[in-house]
Length: 174
Image 1: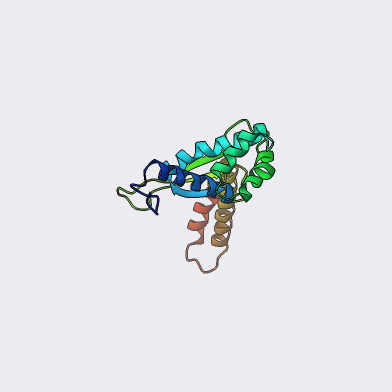
Image 2 (image 1 turned 90 degrees about the horizontal axis):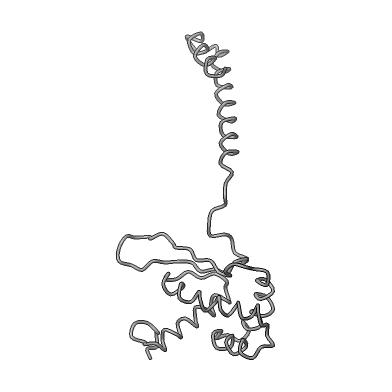
């Protein structure tokens, strides 16, 4: 097996890479890597969390599975004491996948983000905006600005033709 667990490491290297990804996901609760690797590891992470939620730490098969997939043994306790209670009422998946945009065009692999739902990190997706409300606020501000500018033009002693500017502005403000 190759020391880098990259190309040519075989099936055992692939499993070892997946174990490292699942361990890192449980540790940091959000990962950024190649999309295909994260997508493959996602299923194993989902399965471990599902077993922990369903069976708890008293089940022998669940403990063996957690001990195999989590390389750092302190994460086994985190799985049962932190993550399993967090996801006990979930009816959907416990993870989310996001595809990152390509920084440079070319043959490079697609990058992605795999995260546990309910993690303490800021959201990857932008906040949902109330566009109708923001548009009304923007239009109100624009109206007030135009109204004030017209007022200044109408009463400005420095303009040579205040009547022409004031009539055009008055038409806009009404």
